[in-house]
Image (cartoon, rainbow, N blue to C red; front, top):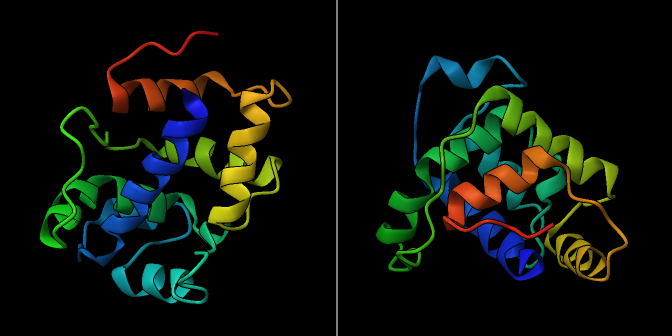
Length: 140
């Protein structure tokens, strides 16, 4: 379950990078702007380097995912809600991806396989984010 949801969650969050925002809350953990996110993700559009995103960029993406997906004609499934991430949650995403060698979306898919096989323990902070997004408890 988590293996299938995690890539969709990350993709939904990444899609939000095309929406502009100037909120000062995106400047305390590396900084985020529409241009910084596009510059990073466009380095390899076929396999976006999500591991290069900082916590502010994850927060920016999380707050704009639904709007952007709808604007691009790919609305998120109604059962999927992208929560706004706190500083701590955004840092937890960065730390989890780094600890598991996730540099790009392909690596994320491999991480999903390792999670499904029981080779990786998903920290509670990440489980909480996924549960908020799906509205379902993750067994574990």
